Image 1: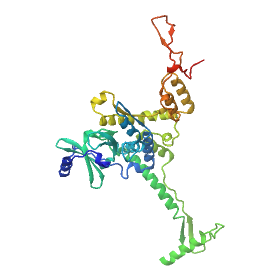
Image 2 (image 1 turned 135 degrees about the vertical axis):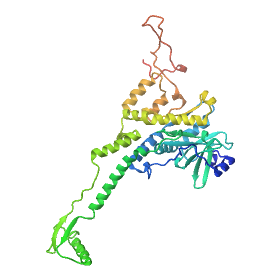
Image 3 (image 1 turned 180 degrees about the horizontal axis):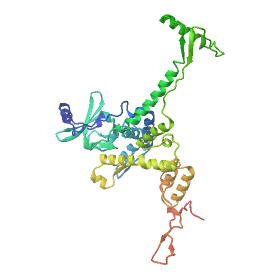
Image 4 (image 1 turned 45 degrees about the vertical axis):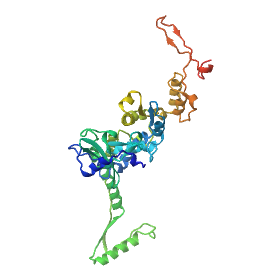
Length: 404
């Protein structure tokens, strides 16, 4: 069974789809963006790429019993064509470009069990209502369509307003895009014009067109070639005047260009330091909470609701996307945080190693330790009296952080 065959399709549904379509509502959903796409502009693509790259580093975790095989699939290869990084990158890119990302479920041969996920290219998606049931029709390649129920799909969106399913288009960004495009064209045309006309020479006599062309060529060859090492131009009486042309190309000044960039940064919730990967840990924390974390939360909800029913969710089955935010801290900050959290039982050895991008040490590294002088205060006794519990690890091994 091929990849796209695993997206649930029923013959009777496809027959009805081929015979007639009715739009979901009066507002026909479309996924058109700025002509040429906002993804084709350098600055907007950089903002989208930065967002998608950071989202691709999210780690999917599957909670609940009996999900070990599915958890491994989610961590490494959600579908036969993409590893987890590529899957999340494309999902985030589609989310940022089209303000809507649609996830299709991949089923096993029985079409009952979800075994993976595939991110659809939204421009190829149409939503239809067939006899009161809503369906997604997706074009995998020209003339090859797949159809599955809307309630089987996962839909992520931003800027949602008019439509109950999809986010708005990017039309409000068009004026800024036009300014960027016009400025780029102005620079190009200015360079072209400065490279073509440099001098204007007025001849004091009337010449035929052919003679005029010959004289222009002679003038250029005599004065603007490598043999004129001295750089001196000589003219005779046939020229009444020779003037050098000063070409001034139009470009947006620095203040206006900064405002254009700020418009793009505001729209995508980013800044120049994030795009150029020179952010501080505080800047990363703000960007994570404003952009990455909302995406991770929505992705967690969408994938959980696709994979598990309400009964399974009630028993703790879920898919969550997490990120180790401490990896972006300085080494000094990492050392301080890990030291403080480890001996208080918040972090395991393996968690601390992960912060420093080091390999885990196996199951032994999953134990938690606390300092032995910590204990529970018994407020029924004297206010300053403290009872210390024995926190020595199993097997009589001393904690490496115990004070002697």
